[in-house]
Amino acid sequence: MLLAFCFSVNLEAQELKSLSGANSPQDDQNPVWVGDNVLLFSRAFHPNNLGGITDPGDIWMTKKNDSGVWEEAIHRADLSTDGYDFALGLEDVLTLLVYHKGSGRNGMYQYSKFGKDWNFLRQVNFSGLENIQGQILGRVANGGKLIFLSGKGPESYGNEDLYISQKTGIIDWSEPVNLGSAINTKGQEMSPYYNPSTQLLYFSSNMHEGAEGKDIFIAKKTGEAWKDWSKPVKWEQISSRGSEVSVTFINENEIVWSSTMNSDGFADLMTFETIVPLEVPTNFSPPPPAILPPKKNIVDAMQIDSNKSINPIYPNTAIGKAEIQLSQLENQTSNEVKEVLEPILTWLVIDTKNKKQLDFELEFYKGSEAINFPKDDSLLVSNLKALGVNEIKVSSEGFFPKDLNISELKTGDKNVVLLTKLEPGSILLLENVNFKRGTSELEGLETEKSLTELANFLVNNPNVKIRINGHTDNVGDPGLNKGLSIERAGSVRDFLVSKGVEFENLRISGWGGSRPIASNATEVGRSKNRRVELEVIQ
Image 1 (cartoon, rainbow, N blue to C red):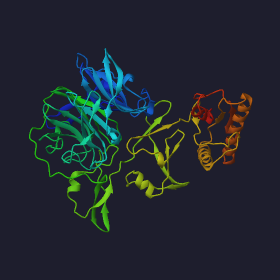
Image 2 (image 1 turned 60 degrees about the horizontal axis):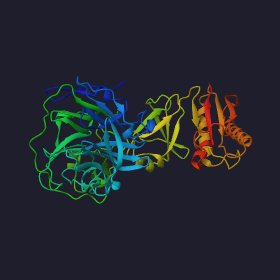
Image 3 (image 1 turned 120 degrees about the vertical axis):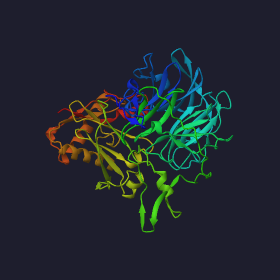
């Protein structure tokens, strides 16, 4: 099902719509218009992405046909990697800039247009880009001489800030410069779009005056320097109770942007049902006096007195990040405490086989002891550490649970968790089960802990029957390898039985090196092939 929805804004009830064929149940963001009726955008966590369901963003394309209908989106593998990818726009009519992070490509790259295809050209020189972290988004300004970026840099005022880089050569760009305190706050400023002809900057913020979740704000350049901006004004025409990010102009009268309507949902690409006059603000006020960025990325938490403090307020529309309203910060005294603005942990739990999003529960552990995490506390890594939590169990009814060490958690992106369904034919890799080298003897506390949790799960599901499959690499005598693999499967079975699992519910097989899942030409591949798997048989 497409996450298509309509809602109304302003008294004129201008109807909005999602871009029909362009949207998906996954996260669709960062639309970039490149002419010829083509819109590029990034789609995260789609099974057809090069990195599969865990891929944080590949580039996809939709076209607007002669009837004004947005056609079904097409995956652009020629512009994507198995890491994070987004298009910034055109330097000129034949050159597209794309940002890659992962899979051996890290930075900004040029692609050259050849017919309907894009051919990889080269990496550009972008000094200082490696220092920009967080959720990086950006856009090439019309004319191809300026790049506006959002990310968290050494001189950020809080979380993501807006930066500018100028083209200095054919493949050379200047070091990003922070746009200053008129634009950037202690919250998040993201996804800038700048129009040189009007000198208007469009961007998303969760902390400028009037922000609900993230909204689009507009500021006007007022001087020669890139820190000279008016006070940003909220673009009421496209604001909702959700979060709006990433505006792109199709023409002077038509726009596309991304929006989400709930705290756990993914973004859709949005536009107006019919073309309406764009109500862009024309009166801009001077900004408040400039301030210097803090030495650390901190925000003021609210404190009434030494014995009572109030936690930062998070809007109901917060998407994945801790978002503090500006109006509440303005009302505080000069004796405020400092608190790190830390992203809230967010989750995407997926059925490994069917690639569907699952409802799930989280359990928190300090060693083997279950910890009651207060429901009124924000799900922050710092809060978990304060309680001594070092592991989180992710579970969904009818699926094998999965344990995550707190050190594995991502605070800037969704934590993607793949769960295996408890049905015949399903195969689960026992990731943390180890043996002493060349033997079938179980080794390590991690192995014991992992198998103990598996045993508890199987005891609670007494009707489930499984086969334990042992595998080796292809090094050595095939007969000995097969014998070792079945002995290791037997060791796992014996441990599970000792913890209360019915012997009759367990079968074992040894396959030696006959069923590799990776190349045996490298040590990394061979280590993947030395494994134990569970296969559900009933």
